[in-house]
Length: 316
Image: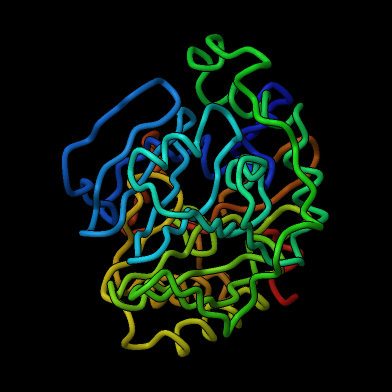
């Protein structure tokens, strides 16, 4: 059994588990980013992964994406709200910035206060308020990268924000950046308002934490496994033939293009009771890791990806 103590709280909340446990994981699904990595300060570094797409990694290892069109740029997620993210994006492009938040967890949504034009699915509004609280942000930074966190003062943290001012982000919307179109898809599961973004002209899909190298479905804000399966089947059908690159929000950032198929196969194994069902416990809340892993968090069976789920919510 994997038994986690109170000391590791920020490693295993729904918000933080993926980032803290697996940001540095090397997995077959990941490829090195294309382009020269640069680092201007301890808060951010970046690499160009396509002609108009830059991947930013913050000091905690969480990933954000800058997508540039002729008229404006989109910033996908805003990390922990530590450091001058807007200023850093402006070193990539001086065009107006529109922010799209994939979901309301602390490691993705805490830096919105710097930006005027913000979109997020309203189903995550309450989650945003809870998880972007200053205590959560400081705890996450300290648990994920203690040496980095020691360099931070209150002045490094951006103020909080009110999601009531955000524009709703829902399936069927398209954000036009000028010759580059971002098509929006719902992918509830990891959170109620989880959103995926298709960069149409690049044929690239950003799944955020909705389909990740470790997809977490066990905390209170998640859907049950069967409901999540329906979400995956829906987005797989809706995006069929539209992408040949897939990006996520943690680890190396790159997923295999057949990742939805892999997820559905894993879900079927769980529902058939044929997974490893490794016990996982935090402060009395019990769940399962579907497939046994080695100390580097790679699956022992050689598969790619994993699911952490609540065994009581398989049919939910």
